[in-house]
Amino acid sequence: MPTYEYQCDACGKKFEKFQSIKSGPIRKCPFCGKSKVRRLISTGAGLIFKGSGFYITDYRSESYKEKAKSESGEKTDTAKTDTAKSDSSKSEAAKSEAPKADTPAPKPTPAPAPKPPKKK
Image (cartoon, rainbow, N blue to C red):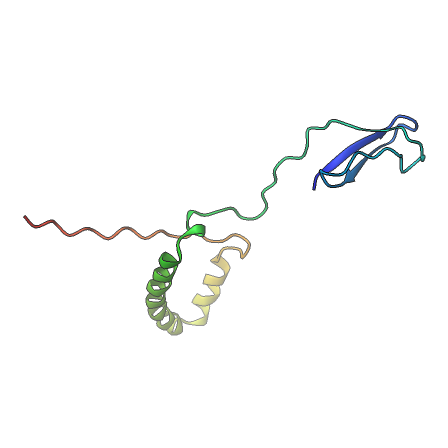
C-alpha cells in the first residue's frame, strides 16, 4: 500500500496518508475540517534493500545443497579433532580475529569435477 501526500488549500498544511491504491483521494482536512484537500504528485519512495546482500548460492537447487552438506560434514570431523588439540590461547586469538556475526562470510563455490577422456 502506498503513501500519498496531500495539501489543504484552506490551512496550507501538508500531510501523508497510507492507504490502498483502490481508495479514493481524501477530501476533508484532518487539521481544519474543511473540504479543500488535494492530492499532490510526488516522486515516490526509492527501493531500499536491507541486510548483508545476496549471494549466488542463496538460490541453489535442493540436490546441490544436500551434496554440499554431505561434503562439508566430512571435512568438519577432522576440523573438530584439530581444534580439540589446540590450547586455549590459540582459540582466544581465533575468536578475536573472527568476523562479526552480522557480516556473513562469503560462500565458496566448489570447482567442477574434471571429465574423463572419451575413448575412441
